[in-house]
Amino acid sequence: MKNDLTVLNIIAANKWKRPIYFTMPYDDLGFQNYLRKDGLAYRLVPVENPTVNTEKMYGLIMDPKKWGYGNANLHSVYYDEINRSQLLEIRKADLQLAFDLIFKNRKDDARKILEHDDKMILQENLPYGMTSRNNNHDRVSLGFLEACYRVDAKELAAKVSASVKKDLQQQQKYYASLDGDKQANLQYENSTVQNLLSALNEMEQQFGGKNKNKIQQQ
Image 1 (cartoon, rainbow, N blue to C red):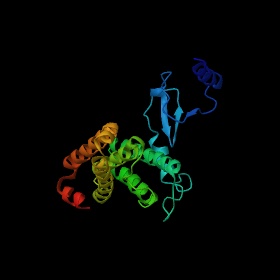
Image 2: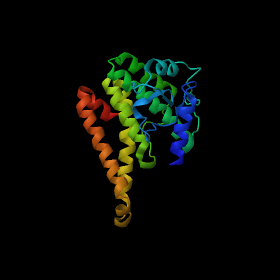
Image 3: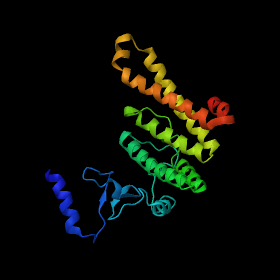
Image 4: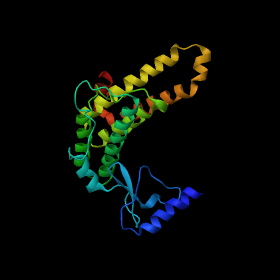
């Protein structure tokens, strides 16, 4: 397609003189193994490499002058749907780095990233549990929860789990309150909630251990 030829032409003409970035993991032309996450963007590099530029991202995220959270660390800030999705993208980037650090056996650094994210995005501004399109918000929070378990951040894990569980249970009650026709029309959404609740419960059983009761009570 012409758009693909345009991308290839830009890369060929550039001759690696300037960095080329994509806003998402662009793999239509086989670039997947040559994209490296540098912050919120993906840099095209001429050699196969890890998907995350670990040291650069860690430095960016922990530097308040370079990595912003849109004042989400301040009380009583309102975020509309668009801003919530943008904040969620920042959280996803934090989470991706956290898992990268976990896989590299740097759990202390991963815990710092997760705790930093929690500090900079207050629950009152962006709860961990929140209804969204395709439940994407709760999906991201479940990934955040798994990372918390893996770095033994017990208090943060309890906080995330309680928020997500509350939201999913509220959705479950809503679908159950509908009449037969409406329930049938929303069967996919309802089944998604059930699957996420099952994943949450399995995660608690796998990682929660002695903290399981504490998490459920909260």
